[in-house]
Image (cartoon, rainbow, N blue to C red; front, side, top):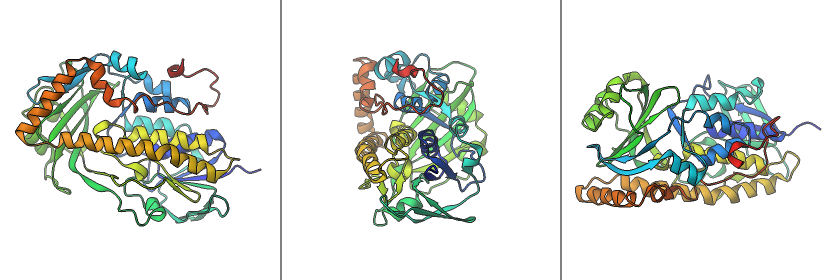
Length: 402
């Protein structure tokens, strides 16, 4: 019998994870990407222990762990440099089974794409879902410039402004503005060593994190009207953050102006009733876009792809599989979307008394030790995937499960 065919619309982190996991499970997979190449728009991504364990399922977890650069303390600071809360990689590893690993998105995309047959990925191919199919009967239909493709399963992975989501849930209001904008850069490491940190000010924050290759991934966020842009984003960063503690001014000075990524943040604060209809299913931002304040957007997309393949056996009951996927993922991701929105409200505080109270509470919590600070991620970073392992040729138990 021919392998059932899964079509993935979008080649981001969630789409490629789903494609690899489905391919390992026995599906024929085709990934359709509108862009001319797989060069990802973005800079760095923090992969928490939950997504590292998910990647173990397809044999990539230890490769990602080998890229860990955080080997000491870190935490949260004020713009004047005073520490508000301290954490360390050993405490994170003990509590959750590993530290957060910062990687460039291109590294992760490349690792995932390399696990698929070269013929599975079609770039420069816009795709439109024209028939979602019925899980128990008619196949789904995806239209491309080269003709229609019939599929046993369609995976919508086309991002926060998903056209696939609009077909499945036309009455849903879609994403809303989270109230702040972000900047992301990757620069050479500064001359002096520093502890990884996230610095919180009035309605703004800055993060500085090391990458394994010696470069620095830095990100910033600030309350701003939706759609606002500066003629010179480097000058804007200097205006907003140039007076903050070292190494922030030096990092801004090292930024090439045309390498600054600025994006407004939108989230799906109104949850979807399910992540599937018929033979079509959603993963990643098109299902549960969230503010980056917990660093879980890409991590949850990876979880999605692994859980989907776990339920969707190629010879199984697809209707039951997709219902089980929604039952697993809707409550979990919805809770994380809400929690990220709560942290966003703390970050957006601009009133001096409110900011002072926030900082005092953070500092007080930190005095009880890093465990209390890390408790924020209980129920998130300690998640474990279904036990099936699709890593081809891998007989050895993944390191994280030993």
